Image 1 (cartoon, rainbow, N blue to C red):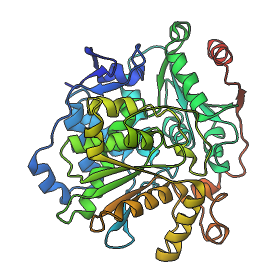
Image 2 (image 1 turned 45 degrees about the vertical axis):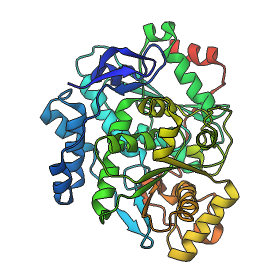
Image 3 (image 1 turned 180 degrees about the horizontal axis):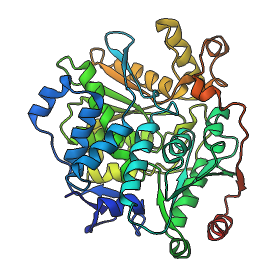
Length: 432
């Protein structure tokens, strides 16, 4: 049976249900699996014959280890992973893993759909409603709103930074209604995340509301994000382990990749691709970690100045800098270079890449200067139509906005203004 501990206290054990419904331990650490199993050789031999949902179930079943019954887990996985994650070939060394084929056109659909169904399973016997608090820098909010929409017994409150998400991203999280509420915070993503974390540690709030998180601080978000690393490997494996290039903000996505590697997935290297919010890149260079206020960029889902999952990475590697550097390389890219990267990819390959994927592409090009023969898989985390307002004009005119996103453009935004003062957020929660 799967057990978890807090990154701040390995002595106390928690069940998966406790970890999923709590979101954060009381000590403000992060939940980590006490054991990450290694998948047997025969799993990798059978992998080419397995569908994406089938391999996802096999990975989840091994990791969760009986914490959810077989048939319930199978239902959760097959309902969650019902869209593809194709690998597109740009050239012999460069591949794109498209993670935007879900309902909200972002990789966070995988985590949000799995988490919503997992929470619903663990919440089924509770008499009071569960309130999900989630901070978003862009795509998380829309994916969580879609994943939890109209789920019985669960309300969702999404905090997003005013003026710092794209128009269509904002529409995704402010137009649904029902059990989804949006708070427009007059600050940055880090301010939103700080408000959420304070609420979890406030006994006045936790005695008044049953609360949990849907950010990548929740372990139920990370588990399904590991699935598509196996799916990508299945599609491209040619004998040599690939390099995964992951655009990184709160570092949940790359942490899920590290989980996959711990489970036996052959990976040569991970590349953490940062925009101007390059705290992790500087850690790799110096061994020192100094969070700082986030900077607004055109790759807004990565605008994080204090990445929460850094604590999980430190836990995986025993806070040993040399071990982290052995597995993870890092590069940082500013906005001008990002726009140049979008142009490069379109000119060279006739492929339209979004700003986050462009950061990953440029990071891989830098890496290739010393490693020209390595094959890289760049995680393309969102559909370019979500960033049509920042794409270079000749390219933006060629983007076809999928119908499920286009229909949101004219819907009425409903959002409650919120300051960055915790007392105001607390008062809002206590009055619900």
